[in-house]
Image (cartoon, rainbow, N blue to C red; front, side, top):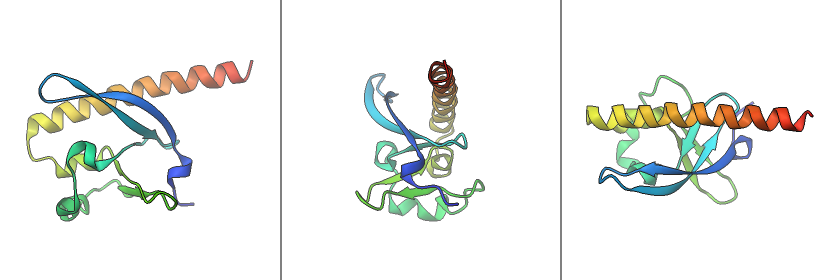
Length: 114
């Protein structure tokens, strides 16, 4: 079975900006532990396709067939980042967000089962 955007849980979160500020983003969480984000949020575009194709983790793009929105696997986004500091910051953010989501999802499942 192929994952689609319908298989994701969506949550709104904040994304730290290089200037120290924050902006609101919509994140998609896959049941397989993946995180998905609009590539425009990371300034990733078609010019990055050759780098993204090297992603060893398999699926790196999802397209919503209804809205035509595109999401990128957060770990695949690392392939498009040349700056080691950007990569390090993004990976720390992804790890933090996935950890928080797992806590929220666990609490949700616990409450639902009670």
